[in-house]
Length: 170
Image (cartoon, rainbow, N blue to C red; front, side, top):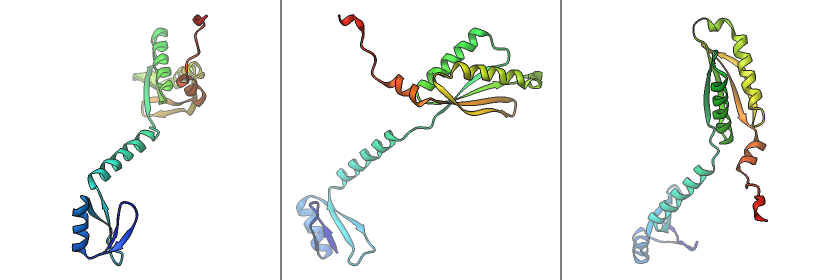
């Protein structure tokens, strides 16, 4: 079998000699290409190899963008203060980088007036226009009407950037 050492050098050895070499160096003999002729094995510290591989996987998972969709529900008869509280919550979610689905749920005979729900959703989108862009226009889904807002890239960058220096340093 072909043996590749940690420094990259290689040699062709019998199985028993390769096992003795691994034992002598305090390393593990790991088969990396069993279908080759002769089979290829590597001398390495398997525990360290698994640790480094797990660490690399964690780093790649951390750097992946999460596509998070959060929902803010409104009702047709929402009061002004409640509406502003929901808009504030949606603004916080958008600033955090999540997409926001703003939904108006119809109860009873409210479904006969989708125009009022569209008006409410349009008002919500206008209030959030400084930090979001409309990704999906109003769409009926069963007994609700919803829009999806995506965070505006410039607004997210401004929120995560360094804060402005204060004037009290004089």
